[in-house]
Structures are given as structure tokens and as C-alpha cells.
Length: 177
Image 1 (spheres, rainbow, N blue to C red):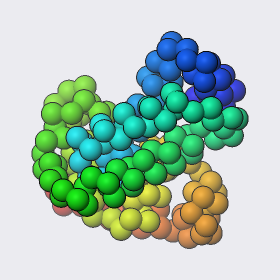
Image 2: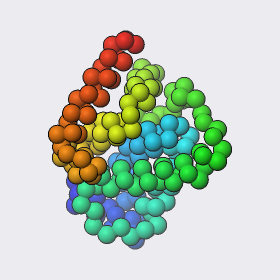
Image 3: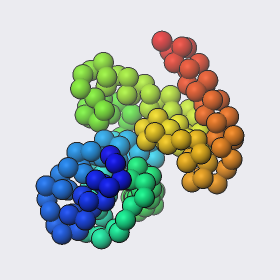
């Protein structure tokens, strides 16, 4: 979504325009759910985080947002980490990964559901930094320079870690395929 349109929607949302909220929701709910799931490893929790992010967007005046994808990513990750501290650490009642197959995030058919579950399993094998780099690049189309700036590491290091992560994912995929 282009920055001007995104900010225009936020402006309308700050005035409690439900149609603007619906438009923003439809554009970003899959990405929000994806980041929350990757962070928490549980689809039920990810749906709770999606609700929290929506409430934050609805209730606050956010001002001008320069990079909508980065902003959505950051508030979602922060909400997921807060959720983890408040709920998951206390109760540790995780839903098995197989339950994701019942979810509709990024899926329209059982074949796509299988692919999503497999991809989640493969990502779980990466360390946290590599996983974050892959998600930002693949799901949010961040450039390596943008990732480097946000993560406070060099673009060359981001590129190298991304390439290594891709190789690990490829090996896992080929081994299981």
C-alpha cells in the first residue's frame, strides 16, 4: 500500500471511519497474523494479537507514517511480545502446530495450508535473527538496506544471513520433499 493512501486511511480512522478501518484491515490482516504467528508460534495467540493491533490502530492518532509495512511489522511484533509476557509465559498452554491447518491465514486450499504449515516448520529451524530477516524480506518486501538499518547491522551481514537462511530452508525443503 502506498504511503499517502495509508496515511489518508489512518487520518480517517482517527475520525472513527469504519470503512477506512475495513480497508486497512483487509490490506494488512494477513501480514499481522503472519508476524504474530511467527513470533508466538501459535495461531490462536496470533489471532488475539491481531485483535490487539486492530484496537491500537482504531484507538490512537498515529500521525504520519513514513513506511507502512515497517510500522505494521513493529506494532505487531511489540504486541506479540507483550502478549507473550502477559499470557504465554504464565500459562504455557500452546496449541500444536498442526492446529494451524484449520486456520485460513494465507490459505485457500488444503494444498496451500500444507505449504504454510511446512514453511512455518522450516522457519522454526532458523535462529531468531535469520527468521526475522527472512520474514521482513519475504512477507514485507524490505530491502536488505532497510532491514540492516532497522536491525542495526550491516547490509552485507543481512545479505549473508539471508543467503545462509535460504540455503538452510532449501536443504530442509529438499530433505522433506
